[in-house]
Image (cartoon, rainbow, N blue to C red):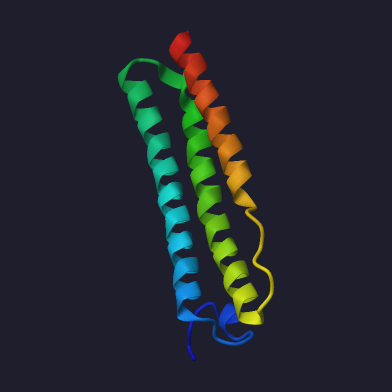
Length: 118
């Protein structure tokens, strides 16, 4: 068929296109979240530099960028696992990244609150 990744598409039967499109929309939503996290990390770093806050915000900026990178990678692996499960007619995988992402954002938000109050 020539579709990539072959490791996903060569397995099982073709699922209903509505489910495939829903899986793709979910993947794209995770990518938007990843992009927003990376941009937020850059914004925190730039704003801290322009406000002469220096390196105090740098760990938070790095945490946001790393969280964004992890979200992008995990989004792709989740899309593959879900697509493969649909093709095999198996149960879909669990949330996986959702709770980790929520905890990471909460920790970064707490760090920002601490810096705002100091």
